[in-house]
Length: 151
Ligand SMILES: [Zn+2]
Image 1 (cartoon, protein in one colour):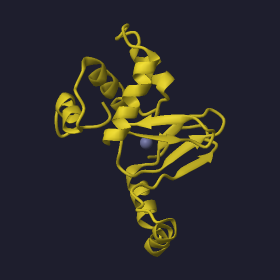
Image 2 (cartoon, protein in one colour; image 1 turned 45 degrees about the vertical axis):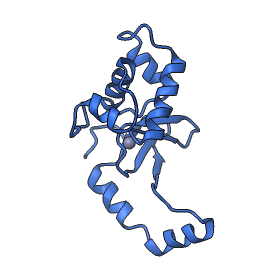
Image 3 (cartoon, protein in one colour; image 1 turned 60 degrees about the vertical axis):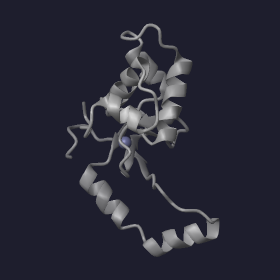
Image 4 (cartoon, helix red, strand yellow; image 1 turned 180 degrees about the vertical axis):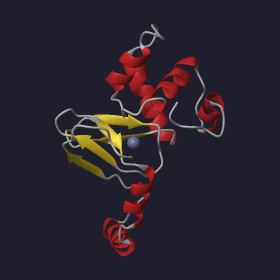
């Protein structure tokens, strides 16, 4: 599992105001265990062999419930695909234009990038749009080079 939680998954789900059903636990554990930022369909394919009673509609509705409760987040990548992420910390992504692979920018670099955003500009955005910015999503799009990534 890529993410270490401070509490067991059933308690984590309950602490976000959701009933912890077996299907929700299976889906959250699958989402948290992958680095791929899956679509609802991709997550369905991941868990279907282990949960034959699960439907794509249930996966979709459960992911939406996770996002509403703050357990996960969804975002639309540059190619218009909706992805889900159990990592709710602010972080940036990189999407390979050719393969469509979507990866996290390493934590330290994401933090440095987000910290460098001009606070006065964000304040002006909030004032002009009459809103409170709660999350920033930055996605880089380009082409991966052959060879191992230096993280
Ligand atoms: Zn991510």
